[in-house]
Image (cartoon, rainbow, N blue to C red; front, side, top):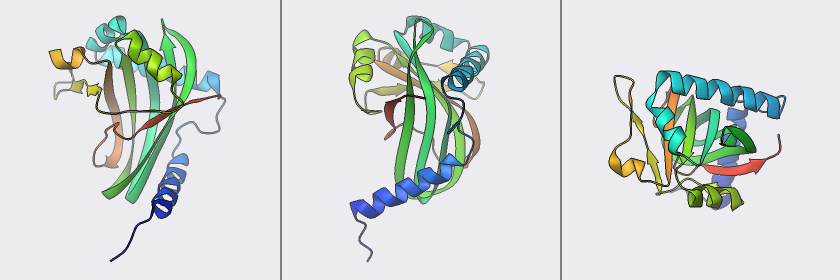
Length: 186
């Protein structure tokens, strides 16, 4: 029987994230201008393809946009992306999203996600944390088979609503559980 230590788990996760760095997710780019351009394009895509997202944006106190998150895994996995937090349509901070995982998994994928902060408290907690981790208080607005964004009553009362879209690649599952968001200087 193989014993997996924290150190081996961490090293394997870092190796997985190293693999994702080579997948065109903006690492080593032109900094803030490149991130802002990708955020603009992502929001334009989201709002034009899922008009219900406009309602979420109008009701939110802030929006974190991750234009490209790249995940890869073979037993151990990792993910990475960079994006921007916007308040009143103005970029106020830049963030990275990192994820490590272990389990039955194989493949690689890229996707975009947007977090809508629906309360001032949720936004303030996110901004003052050293590393905010997506957890149980995060609710997902689902994209149905017809391409419509749906958020039920329970979802719309949540402090943070996530929309995950634009999948490319083949990797089972795209959730934000275990994703850690950290403020960066691009």
